[in-house]
Amino acid sequence: MRLKQRKYIVVLGSLMSGLGKGIVTASIGKLLQSRGLKVSPIKFDGYLNVDCGTMNPFRHGEVFVLDDGTECDMDFGTYERFLNADLSSANSITGGKLFRNIIEKERRGGFLGRDVQIVPHLTDEIKGWVRRTGQEQDADVVIVEVGGTVGDLENGYFLEAMRQLAAEERVLFVQLTWVPSMSEGEPKTKPTQHANKLIQSMGILPKIIICRQDEPLSREAREKISMFCNVPPSNVFDDPDVATIYELPLILERQKMTELLLSELGIEEKDEDMKEWRALVERIKSPKREVSVAITGKYTAVKDAYVSIKEALVHAGAATATRANIKWVETSEIEDGKASVRELLSGCDGIIVPGGYGSRGVEGKIACVKYARENGMPFLGLCYGLQMAVIEWARNKAGMEKANTTEVDEKTPYPVIDFLPEQREVREKGGNQRLGAWPCRLKRGTRAYEAYGKEEISERHRHRYEVNNDYRERLERSGLVVSGTSPDGSIVEMVEWPDGWGVGTQAHPELKSRLERPAPLFVAFLKACAEFSKKG
Image (cartoon, rainbow, N blue to C red; front, side):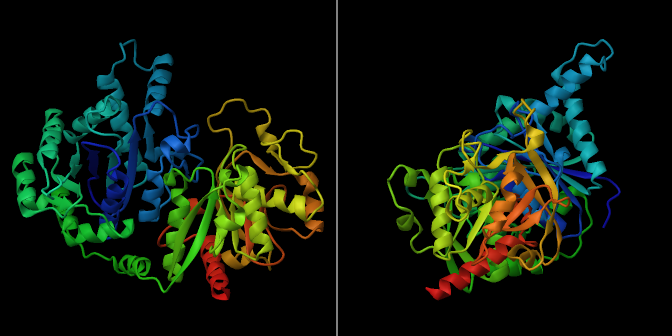
């Protein structure tokens, strides 16, 4: 189905952050996609950073990386996982990007001597960006998620741009809200009513209201929201807690949201096709087996720092009918002597050492890798995790005592992990890494090749250190298998143990994992965990 006129949906959050706008936006996209429509999601973030590259995971959660190297908000991972699509820099709008564009244009004399203002110059820039992205990506429907909460200073100018767009294009506004319940369980709709009035005072009229709540939305609450927010009761939707986020499109579908979306946008109806999606969701909810997987890192206090890993395990679990129960292991506790490796990994069927930066928790990670190798426990090392595995092997199997990465110890006698050569002269912090999708050639007969089933693959990267080729021959001579390299052989991309299931990858395969297309390494890892679990 191709539309003659492009349509737009704008998703707004009201009352508070953390309601799940990204999941709602992705779910709406999935519903439209199930009716044969091509969807392009756009996220606006009001911060003045150009991208998320320098943001701390403790404050902002995971930094998600796209194929083109864009470092962006974790919601883009949700979009890609739901829509099974590869997005680009054009889908990510930040305040920093917008103001940079405006200032650069002004310096070039692009405004013909006029005084440059928020309206119309900045709002025109926003509308042009949204339209251009939809056109370039040949989208039937562009879904714009406005980051933050209505009423924030940071997104006010963007909301004004969306108001203007609605006067020029077919735009549907969706309000996501929270309906709290008091101790007696009575849902309170007054906050939503006030939030809706604030939105309407901006000249924006939401036609669909989606409610997060602690209790099922009562008929009385629905009718109150309908009356005071100027929408029919059928336009008020429940967004309840779910066993898995991938169930939300099915819940909204049952409430007939797809039909309403198509009607409000003036799109002709078409039969839906979510049979495969329903089957995958059912496999997530009703697995045949369960395994325990330790994620050993230093950001475990903020689970959103590892959201792509968690979701990649869900995807691999759906493919293998396996539920991965995650045990979070804070590796700094090992270094501080608060807990032993054996104590923390007891009962686990496999471990993942994720990406990261800096020295905190490093020795704890290395100790976890050593424990897994010596006990035959499946191990998957991601980015920094590969580097920890190489250091552990160098120290304990290749005779290189005190081997390390120069990121942690610049004076190590064996710098088996060192700066990427092209990074030595880079001084700016924004985007000074090997970013985005890079090709890799796998060695036949290895665990990595068995997982992917082909020699040529592509995965996304985010790192500035790599295996030092000065020590590569010595590492291989001692038994470490280099199972993947860059096509020219100059960069080590994957290593693995000669015995047992232990694979490290310099890439982040979790970033390309989708429910409908799970990451091969995660699938192979979960299978290995299931086998290890059987052995008891």
